[in-house]
Amino acid sequence: MDDFNNLLADGETDSHYLLIQSADVYFPGPDSKVIISNEFPIGNWYPNGDKSKWIAPRTDAGKWNESGIYTYRLYFDLTGHDLNSTEIKGGWSTDNNGVDILINGQSTGFATPYEAFGAGLFPFEIKSGFQSGLNTLDFIVNNGYAPTGLRVEFAPTSKTITMK
Image (cartoon, rainbow, N blue to C red; front, side):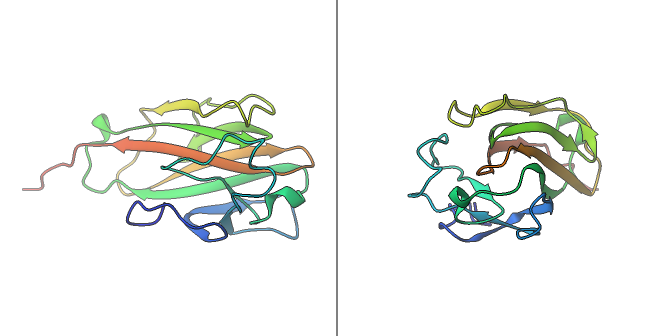
């Protein structure tokens, strides 16, 4: 999604997700790319939706990436938010498997099964670990030598603190 909640076009850089760790020296990040929707591995993967698309280190994800860990980072600011009412709910799918989601470097324990990328989005709900100001949300993906990617849909909720 762009800053106005519109889906990004195939091949665009998703500026919200930084690829901070890549096992592939030819695609080291930090850019994460919206993959081309009408090419392999789309068809095997859970389809793109109206709220999110698959991202990967490269637009032509079917040409494979090296095996290993890929970490996608999302920054968000909770300045002025009631941290006790803040939560992030959503779903994610990965190829090959999601190892963990980290909130500010701390494990949430959410993972995805190995090679379940066609099965749908696996739910997660984060209710703690937030801090006032800048926060990070890391999606850690393990790739067996093949295409790799990440798809996330979420709807964060928070009540804004009224400053007096």
